[in-house]
Image (tube, rainbow, N blue to C red):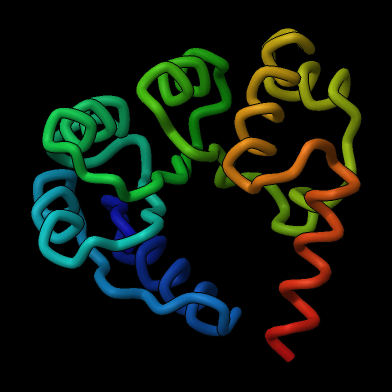
Length: 158
């Protein structure tokens, strides 16, 4: 699912995700209330959500989803360059965070913990904490195993 205030961003994300081929887009909406209602009805696995929605912030949406026990994993997508939004997104349970100005290829650059910390404005210990949580969710114990899992899944999808 996708939620963003901009029709151009919604259409672009919808097109980009559909062309990827690994995901089905089950809904594209313009605000947080629509997103929460649709997420509850459709039980979407992942949602890409703009931080500044017309009716609430991404943080408020994350809190609402948590209260309603909606398990959709949220990827926060924002043009805000400050670290306050990143910190709030993490605190409210965002599954991932990406800047609207980031090149999609940069997500796969293999940054070290220190590089991630420097670019996001958090400590390297916080990076380690989040990586450990990610590894636990994937059922792996390190980056090499995470990459191997990804490569195996990509190979199986061909």
